[in-house]
Length: 113
Image (cartoon, rainbow, N blue to C red; front, side, top):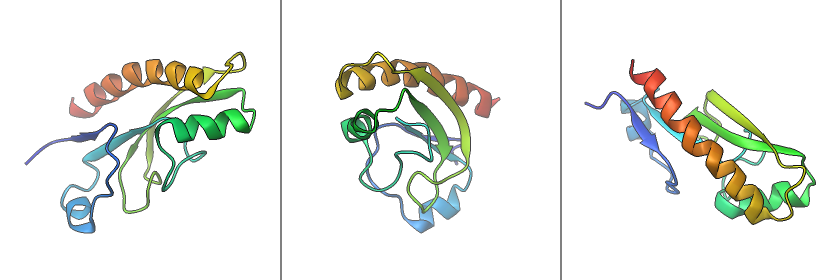
């Protein structure tokens, strides 16, 4: 039985049986500061496009527990990034991805100790 299940870039929605069996053991990383820009259909470049179109000056990433409600589980950690100088959604994506690479390993280490 796993101590922790880590989802990264996983676009499928897990069913209730799996979520119940591994409650508070499944985490996901999302490329926004949830609850903003979360939910069904908000993934990858779509998130950064919405952030860019709305003129946000700050974005980031979130690690959260996975529940039956997409991107609505308890937030474990977030990392913010200043995107005020970003010229495109792809530039925002790159900036946020660099934060994701740092945040996710930190959270995993913390949770498995």
